[in-house]
Length: 181
Length: 128
Image (tube, rainbow over the protein chains, first blue to last red):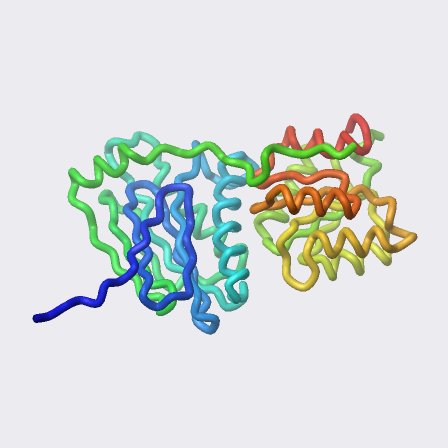
Protein backbone atom coordinates (compact mmCIF):
# COMPACT_ATOMS: atom_id res chain seq x y z
CA UNK A 1 0.00 0.00 0.00
CA UNK A 2 1.27 3.41 -0.90
CA UNK A 3 0.96 5.87 1.96
CA UNK A 4 1.66 9.55 1.40
CA UNK A 5 3.62 11.25 4.12
CA UNK A 6 1.22 13.87 5.45
CA UNK A 7 2.48 17.36 4.75
CA UNK A 8 1.57 20.33 6.81
CA UNK A 9 -0.63 22.43 4.58
CA UNK A 10 -1.20 25.93 5.90
CA UNK A 11 -3.68 28.18 4.15
CA UNK A 12 -2.91 31.89 3.86
CA UNK A 13 -6.09 33.93 3.90
CA UNK A 14 -6.50 37.42 2.45
CA UNK A 15 -4.83 40.15 4.47
CA UNK A 16 -2.60 37.60 6.18
CA UNK A 17 0.89 36.10 5.90
CA UNK A 18 2.73 33.01 7.11
CA UNK A 19 6.42 32.14 7.30
CA UNK A 20 8.08 28.81 7.98
CA UNK A 21 11.47 27.12 8.10
CA UNK A 22 9.98 23.61 8.16
CA UNK A 23 10.67 21.54 5.02
CA UNK A 24 7.37 19.64 5.29
CA UNK A 25 5.23 22.78 5.33
CA UNK A 26 3.31 23.81 2.23
CA UNK A 27 1.71 27.24 2.16
CA UNK A 28 -1.42 27.41 0.06
CA UNK A 29 -3.79 30.09 -1.09
CA UNK A 30 -6.53 30.77 -3.62
CA UNK A 31 -6.32 33.96 -5.63
CA UNK A 32 -8.66 35.88 -7.89
CA UNK A 33 -7.69 39.54 -8.24
CA UNK A 34 -5.59 39.24 -5.09
CA UNK A 35 -1.82 38.86 -5.27
CA UNK A 36 0.37 36.54 -3.21
CA UNK A 37 4.05 37.31 -2.81
CA UNK A 38 6.18 34.26 -1.98
CA UNK A 39 9.55 35.30 -0.52
CA UNK A 40 12.44 33.07 0.43
CA UNK A 41 16.02 33.26 1.66
CA UNK A 42 17.67 30.19 0.12
CA UNK A 43 20.67 30.40 2.48
CA UNK A 44 18.69 30.64 5.72
CA UNK A 45 16.15 28.11 4.45
CA UNK A 46 13.15 30.18 5.39
CA UNK A 47 10.28 31.48 3.32
CA UNK A 48 6.80 32.87 3.51
CA UNK A 49 3.75 34.01 1.65
CA UNK A 50 1.33 36.90 1.98
CA UNK A 51 -2.02 37.47 0.29
CA UNK A 52 -3.34 40.95 -0.34
CA UNK A 53 -5.87 43.02 -2.22
CA UNK A 54 -5.20 46.72 -2.14
CA UNK A 55 -8.24 48.85 -1.39
CA UNK A 56 -9.24 51.14 -4.24
CA UNK A 57 -6.64 52.31 -6.69
CA UNK A 58 -3.08 51.31 -6.03
CA UNK A 59 -1.37 53.31 -8.72
CA UNK A 60 1.57 54.49 -6.64
CA UNK A 61 1.76 57.84 -4.92
CA UNK A 62 1.23 58.22 -1.23
CA UNK A 63 -2.35 56.97 -0.96
CA UNK A 64 -3.76 54.83 1.80
CA UNK A 65 -3.83 51.84 -0.55
CA UNK A 66 -0.11 52.01 -1.17
CA UNK A 67 0.65 52.36 2.53
CA UNK A 68 -1.55 49.32 3.23
CA UNK A 69 0.22 47.23 0.59
CA UNK A 70 3.63 48.31 1.87
CA UNK A 71 2.50 47.36 5.37
CA UNK A 72 1.59 43.81 4.32
CA UNK A 73 4.88 43.37 2.48
CA UNK A 74 6.79 44.73 5.46
CA UNK A 75 5.08 42.34 7.91
CA UNK A 76 6.15 39.38 5.77
CA UNK A 77 9.71 40.67 5.38
CA UNK A 78 10.06 41.43 9.10
CA UNK A 79 8.83 37.94 10.01
CA UNK A 80 11.39 36.41 7.62
CA UNK A 81 14.21 38.53 9.07
CA UNK A 82 13.21 37.39 12.55
CA UNK A 83 13.65 33.78 11.40
CA UNK A 84 17.17 34.47 10.22
CA UNK A 85 16.64 35.65 6.64
CA UNK A 86 18.64 38.52 5.20
CA UNK A 87 16.96 41.07 3.01
CA UNK A 88 19.72 41.10 0.40
CA UNK A 89 19.29 37.36 -0.12
CA UNK A 90 15.52 37.35 -0.54
CA UNK A 91 14.02 36.21 -3.81
CA UNK A 92 10.38 36.45 -4.81
CA UNK A 93 7.71 34.69 -6.80
CA UNK A 94 4.45 36.50 -7.53
CA UNK A 95 1.04 35.06 -8.29
CA UNK A 96 -2.48 36.32 -8.89
CA UNK A 97 -3.89 39.62 -10.01
CA UNK A 98 -6.43 38.13 -12.41
CA UNK A 99 -8.55 40.54 -14.38
CA UNK A 100 -12.03 39.14 -14.37
CA UNK A 101 -15.18 40.34 -16.08
CA UNK A 102 -17.00 40.55 -12.74
CA UNK A 103 -14.78 43.40 -11.64
CA UNK A 104 -15.08 46.54 -13.65
CA UNK A 105 -11.92 48.13 -12.33
CA UNK A 106 -8.48 46.81 -13.18
CA UNK A 107 -7.69 46.17 -9.53
CA UNK A 108 -6.01 42.83 -10.30
CA UNK A 109 -3.48 44.43 -12.61
CA UNK A 110 -2.81 47.25 -10.14
CA UNK A 111 -2.11 44.75 -7.37
CA UNK A 112 0.43 43.01 -9.58
CA UNK A 113 2.04 46.31 -10.60
CA UNK A 114 2.25 47.36 -6.95
CA UNK A 115 3.99 44.12 -5.93
CA UNK A 116 6.50 44.31 -8.79
CA UNK A 117 7.28 47.97 -8.07
CA UNK A 118 7.68 47.35 -4.34
CA UNK A 119 10.08 44.44 -4.86
CA UNK A 120 12.01 46.39 -7.50
CA UNK A 121 12.39 49.40 -5.19
CA UNK A 122 13.55 47.16 -2.35
CA UNK A 123 16.07 45.36 -4.54
CA UNK A 124 14.39 41.96 -4.14
CA UNK A 125 14.63 39.97 -7.36
CA UNK A 126 11.53 38.36 -8.79
CA UNK A 127 12.63 34.94 -10.04
CA UNK A 128 9.23 33.81 -11.20
CA UNK A 129 5.77 35.19 -11.60
CA UNK A 130 2.36 34.40 -12.96
CA UNK A 131 0.28 37.56 -12.89
CA UNK A 132 -2.82 38.74 -14.70
CA UNK A 133 -4.96 36.76 -17.08
CA UNK A 134 -8.66 36.16 -16.69
CA UNK A 135 -8.65 33.15 -14.37
CA UNK A 136 -7.92 32.70 -10.68
CA UNK A 137 -5.19 30.50 -9.29
CA UNK A 138 -4.66 27.97 -6.54
CA UNK A 139 -1.06 28.34 -5.37
CA UNK A 140 1.19 26.06 -3.33
CA UNK A 141 4.57 27.26 -2.06
CA UNK A 142 7.21 25.26 -0.23
CA UNK A 143 8.91 27.95 1.88
CA UNK A 144 12.17 26.09 2.45
CA UNK A 145 12.84 24.75 -1.06
CA UNK A 146 11.17 27.66 -2.82
CA UNK A 147 9.23 25.34 -5.06
CA UNK A 148 5.90 26.75 -6.21
CA UNK A 149 3.02 25.19 -8.08
CA UNK A 150 -0.14 26.74 -9.39
CA UNK A 151 -3.41 25.34 -10.70
CA UNK A 152 -5.58 27.61 -12.79
CA UNK A 153 -9.18 27.78 -11.59
CA UNK A 154 -12.15 27.25 -13.86
CA UNK A 155 -14.25 30.24 -14.88
CA UNK A 156 -16.87 29.35 -12.28
CA UNK A 157 -14.34 28.89 -9.48
CA UNK A 158 -12.75 32.20 -10.45
CA UNK A 159 -16.08 34.02 -10.14
CA UNK A 160 -16.71 32.50 -6.72
CA UNK A 161 -13.21 33.39 -5.56
CA UNK A 162 -13.42 36.98 -6.78
CA UNK A 163 -16.82 37.38 -5.10
CA UNK A 164 -15.21 36.50 -1.76
CA UNK A 165 -12.38 38.98 -2.21
CA UNK A 166 -13.07 42.32 -0.60
CA UNK A 167 -10.46 44.91 0.17
CA UNK A 168 -9.77 44.83 3.89
CA UNK A 169 -9.47 48.17 5.62
CA UNK A 170 -5.97 48.82 6.92
CA UNK A 171 -5.67 47.59 10.49
CA UNK A 172 -3.04 49.42 12.54
CA UNK A 173 -0.62 47.23 14.47
CA UNK A 174 -1.02 48.96 17.82
CA UNK A 175 -4.33 50.09 19.22
CA UNK A 176 -4.27 53.46 17.52
CA UNK A 177 -1.62 55.99 18.31
CA UNK A 178 -0.53 56.66 21.83
CA UNK A 179 0.20 60.20 22.87
CA UNK A 180 2.69 60.67 25.63
CA UNK A 181 2.58 64.42 25.87
CA UNK B 1 7.86 80.62 7.30
CA UNK B 2 5.56 77.91 8.61
CA UNK B 3 6.49 75.63 11.50
CA UNK B 4 6.83 72.70 9.08
CA UNK B 5 9.40 74.62 7.04
CA UNK B 6 11.48 75.39 10.12
CA UNK B 7 11.72 71.78 11.32
CA UNK B 8 14.64 69.64 10.16
CA UNK B 9 13.31 66.11 9.95
CA UNK B 10 15.19 62.81 9.72
CA UNK B 11 13.41 59.74 8.34
CA UNK B 12 14.85 56.36 9.35
CA UNK B 13 13.61 53.17 7.72
CA UNK B 14 15.34 50.17 6.14
CA UNK B 15 12.72 49.89 3.41
CA UNK B 16 13.10 52.18 0.40
CA UNK B 17 9.35 52.22 -0.21
CA UNK B 18 8.57 53.22 3.37
CA UNK B 19 11.13 56.05 3.18
CA UNK B 20 9.53 57.31 -0.02
CA UNK B 21 6.03 57.19 1.52
CA UNK B 22 7.19 58.97 4.66
CA UNK B 23 9.04 61.61 2.67
CA UNK B 24 5.96 62.13 0.57
CA UNK B 25 3.77 62.48 3.68
CA UNK B 26 6.13 65.07 5.20
CA UNK B 27 6.22 67.00 1.95
CA UNK B 28 2.42 67.08 1.95
CA UNK B 29 2.56 68.46 5.49
CA UNK B 30 4.76 71.31 4.29
CA UNK B 31 8.20 70.05 5.32
CA UNK B 32 11.09 71.22 3.16
CA UNK B 33 14.10 70.00 5.16
CA UNK B 34 14.02 66.20 5.16
CA UNK B 35 16.99 63.82 5.42
CA UNK B 36 16.75 60.03 5.10
CA UNK B 37 18.72 57.19 6.67
CA UNK B 38 18.51 53.44 6.03
CA UNK B 39 19.19 52.22 9.55
CA UNK B 40 19.71 53.40 13.13
CA UNK B 41 23.48 53.45 12.85
CA UNK B 42 23.43 55.76 9.83
CA UNK B 43 20.79 57.95 11.48
CA UNK B 44 22.88 58.31 14.62
CA UNK B 45 25.92 59.36 12.58
CA UNK B 46 23.83 61.98 10.77
CA UNK B 47 22.45 63.26 14.09
CA UNK B 48 25.94 63.62 15.56
CA UNK B 49 27.14 65.73 12.64
CA UNK B 50 23.91 67.62 12.11
CA UNK B 51 21.29 67.37 14.88
CA UNK B 52 17.74 67.39 13.46
CA UNK B 53 14.68 68.63 15.36
CA UNK B 54 12.51 65.62 14.53
CA UNK B 55 13.35 61.94 14.04
CA UNK B 56 10.72 59.61 12.62
CA UNK B 57 12.09 56.10 12.87
CA UNK B 58 10.96 52.61 12.03
CA UNK B 59 11.24 50.15 14.95
CA UNK B 60 12.40 46.99 13.20
CA UNK B 61 15.72 47.62 11.41
CA UNK B 62 19.08 45.88 11.00
CA UNK B 63 22.22 47.11 12.83
CA UNK B 64 20.49 49.49 15.26
CA UNK B 65 16.73 49.32 15.71
CA UNK B 66 14.41 52.22 16.52
CA UNK B 67 14.67 51.83 20.28
CA UNK B 68 18.46 51.57 20.08
CA UNK B 69 18.56 54.78 18.07
CA UNK B 70 16.23 56.47 20.55
CA UNK B 71 18.49 55.47 23.45
CA UNK B 72 21.61 56.68 21.65
CA UNK B 73 19.99 60.03 20.77
CA UNK B 74 18.71 60.58 24.31
CA UNK B 75 22.15 59.75 25.74
CA UNK B 76 23.92 62.43 23.68
CA UNK B 77 23.83 66.03 24.93
CA UNK B 78 23.77 67.48 21.42
CA UNK B 79 20.79 65.41 20.25
CA UNK B 80 18.80 64.52 23.36
CA UNK B 81 16.17 67.23 22.85
CA UNK B 82 15.11 66.00 19.40
CA UNK B 83 11.50 64.91 19.05
CA UNK B 84 11.32 61.18 18.39
CA UNK B 85 8.41 59.33 16.80
CA UNK B 86 8.58 55.56 16.40
CA UNK B 87 6.74 53.80 13.59
CA UNK B 88 5.99 50.15 13.97
CA UNK B 89 4.47 47.48 11.77
CA UNK B 90 4.03 44.89 14.51
CA UNK B 91 3.92 46.82 17.74
CA UNK B 92 2.39 45.67 20.95
CA UNK B 93 1.76 47.25 24.36
CA UNK B 94 5.19 46.20 25.63
CA UNK B 95 6.92 48.04 22.78
CA UNK B 96 4.82 51.16 23.35
CA UNK B 97 5.70 51.13 27.07
CA UNK B 98 9.38 50.55 26.38
CA UNK B 99 9.40 53.40 23.86
CA UNK B 100 7.68 55.70 26.36
CA UNK B 101 10.12 54.81 29.13
CA UNK B 102 13.06 55.53 26.82
CA UNK B 103 11.67 58.97 26.01
CA UNK B 104 9.84 58.57 22.70
CA UNK B 105 7.40 61.37 21.99
CA UNK B 106 4.97 59.12 20.18
CA UNK B 107 4.44 55.69 18.69
CA UNK B 108 2.53 55.38 15.42
CA UNK B 109 1.28 52.13 13.95
CA UNK B 110 1.85 51.34 10.29
CA UNK B 111 0.04 51.86 8.01
CA UNK B 112 -0.20 55.43 9.25
CA UNK B 113 -2.52 58.07 7.84
CA UNK B 114 -1.38 61.60 7.00
CA UNK B 115 -3.79 62.94 9.64
CA UNK B 116 -2.30 60.77 12.38
CA UNK B 117 1.22 61.67 11.36
CA UNK B 118 0.27 65.35 11.45
CA UNK B 119 -1.34 64.99 14.90
CA UNK B 120 1.71 63.15 16.26
CA UNK B 121 4.08 65.89 15.03
CA UNK B 122 1.79 68.72 16.15
CA UNK B 123 1.58 67.17 19.63
CA UNK B 124 5.26 68.08 19.96
CA UNK B 125 5.73 71.21 17.84
CA UNK B 126 2.27 72.78 17.78
CA UNK B 127 0.43 73.71 14.59
CA UNK B 128 2.45 72.99 11.44
